Length: 63
Image (cartoon, rainbow, N blue to C red; front, side):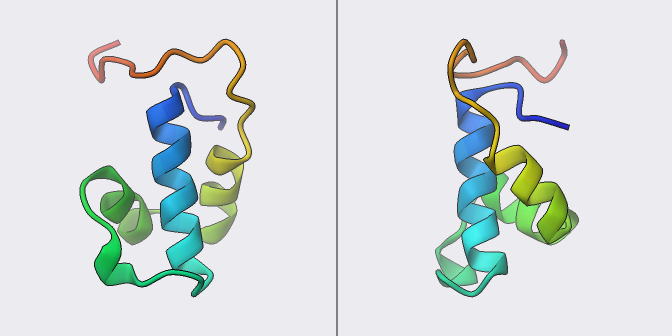
């Protein structure tokens, strides 16, 4: 499932970096920390590799 916003894509990239050991887990906060805890590396890779062209900056979670 691709990211629905640029913010989701960036959060997934940060979580993926921590999951791979490239950054510290303690540096994560907010959505990236939740993604790190609840998603697999493959899921994070899918979100993080989403093309940014045409994506909104943020999406309401209610939508």
